[in-house]
Length: 408
Image 1 (cartoon, one colour):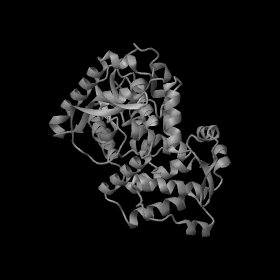
Image 2 (spheres, rainbow, N blue to C red):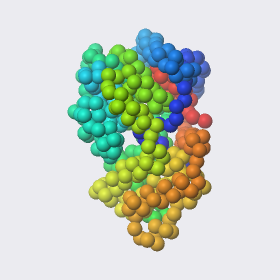
Image 3 (cartoon, rainbow, N blue to C red):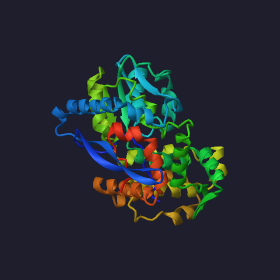
């Protein structure tokens, strides 16, 4: 199985695109058979950065408004508002609120609000371990408690392709055990045991298919939905809250950079944030990712299912391949770690950076490896489960223009 898609502060290069509304025919699984359905599809292609962005925002918002006026779609949708809680990063000072969408750049926005509202120096804010950022920024959050409550600021909604978002959530929370107790519970309910690596047990033998089947089934039955895979439509109250900007994770760097330039903040902060958009480079990014992932290894729940740190590092290594940091043909340095009988964050970082820098991938090659991982994850997925994904994210596919068919 393909494995990983980690969120980092830097989100690729700058592709300039214009939004246009197209119609395409997808397929939908219902009552034991596939049926055709008409799907609005927006292509994210800007013609020109300087002249096209305002048209892009207008096109996206108009597409949302058009979709929201189609009441039949909303009435037939099975996912309800009460299944999730809308939370926003809000700054009255800047007159802006950003819907907090996990697995779609929410960590970056948390840092932006810490800098602006808390006066934290930008470079200091970006050095905070990712697992601590959301706790520190919780005081900057606002919840909506009724469907008619408004933000009283300009609103920003962030979307991400549901197939990609589900896969990212699985890898981060279940395969790499950030939600270790949830992974254990699912494994026990399915009668499955530990995940076994060459170095020993680490985690649970829960597949991506198991995860998707579980979360979509529970959601469609009316259970509460975790924010890391909740539909953006319900989590952000897309058809009730007045939004001025619609960001897409697929063009997150360019979209966010444009919005930051509209804010009433100093040019110094704008310049610093712009530099951060394009990242400190793969090496620096990887150091932060490893530190964040490794921070969980000593928790009691982790020690119970993954006492061998080398086994966890093997999982991390495979994930870095699938994200395109390490070439797929580069072997894990098992013997060197086994010989030293010592696994720590410094040694892991050194090994990963050596693999990255000895035979680096181009941006095109990195993108291809990430795409391959996503396609492999959905290859062979039963039609019944694909249908559940399409139903759970029906409004996200429609309102944000994502293809409802699984990636190929």
